[in-house]
Amino acid sequence: MKIKKRIISKQEHSVSRDAISDNALKVLYRLKDAGYQAYLVGGGVRDLLLGKKPKDFDVATDAHPDEVKGLFRNCRLIGRRFRLAHILYGRDVIEVATFRGPHEGESTIRADQNKDGRIIRDNVFGSLEEDALRRDFSINALYYNIRDDSIVDFTGGMDDLKYKTIRMIGDADTRYREDPVRMLRAVRFAAKLNFQMEHHTNNLIFEMGGLLEDIPVARLFDETIKMFQGGYGLKCFQLLREYRLFELLFPMTEASIKLNQEGNSGTLQLIEQALRNTDTRIASGKSVNPAFFLAVLLWHPLHEYKNRFIELGQHEMEALLSASREVITRQQAHTSIPKRLSLMMKEIWHMQLQLQHPTRKRALRTLENKRFRAGYDFLLLRNDVGEPELTSLCEWWTEIQTKSLSEQEAMCESLGRTQKKSGKRRKRRRKKPVNSYAAHSDDCQQ
Ligand code: ATP
Ligand code: MG
Image (cartoon, rainbow, N blue to C red; front, side, top):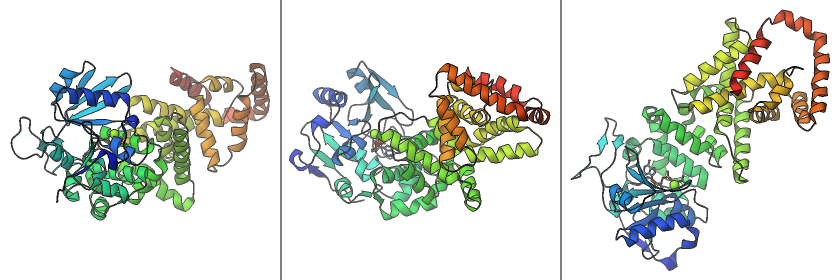
């Protein structure tokens, strides 16, 4: 790769100190005043140049991690693969990375690669220029210098920003091999910024996607969350499918989409609608729950497994419980799912049965369940995309939330009366499920 260093002076670019967070500035000033080089780099500079609000600020310096620690009381050193300093200001974290160099040559700490060329340790320190070449895309390798407010560009990042291009630095084949997660990052930035990928950066993804299978599932989970909960989830999902990466991350979901395309039972519609809602919520500053979206992604695979368990003789609730365990275990071979989230997913799924079969005795307890809101939103979403026979149930659950306690009790009573008429028949058909389900739902609430 031809390297041409370009310095863009303060007057020639649009980044102003006012747009940089106070905490990031504090870190930059302290490093500079201690005699080190200090640059803002990565998404912070890229997004400011694009007139967007950065998600976070990353700093690059020639100070080694221990030297950074010596300068800040609120500093924690983290990471094995990349040793980094985190400077903590309450919940705000400024990440400070020491310039990285190439793997060859002299170094105090070695960088290791596995047989596929994947970097498993990368703690070789280097110069500013070497650091730029170790970064993923040219638009992520622009350095804002706190000394004179200039921007340093070694890789043509300024032009790529101008022409809306995502370009891998160096040889794309080697760089994807070093870290296959860069494929997911390329897709994420294409979605987030609405940029096109440069030819090689683009084409190699189709050939090399399979390398993602060797990446630790916890890292793939983190990337998944960034892609779907970053405010541009729908676009990311569509691109991931185009690049045939989605099927590597969520093979059961992709199989359901394909299966259902003929029967048109709505897997794709459900996922896309959920992502549309998530993107809208994020745009209006509302919080989003990753368990909700994961529950959406695996909803149809869950049903396919549930039906299999029913065929094996289990009754509906039992089959749902077996299927939830099965689907989550299988998914965890591709992306991990933290226990806290998998519990929530199960609660959302199980609550669908309670919401679909409200009874005089149980409806008020369902309403008080701490997962009611998520379960109810899930039911509305299913109804929105046209799952049959849910509209009047949705109306009933919507109405009951607007009532006083005595009115709610009356609504439940009238439910009891209508159910009594058909009660005997139902009792004979399902011996235990109602009670065993009620017991289970108590477990969920703990
Ligand atoms: P955002 O924070 O908006 O998601 P970002 O570009 O800041 O985007 P981070 O994950 O915060 O992304 O990483 C910060 C910077 O570190 C990147 O801009 C890039 O220069 C570098 N970087 C991150 N991950 C990799 C990687 N896998 N390979 C090479 N460089 C990377
Ligand atoms: Mg960042």
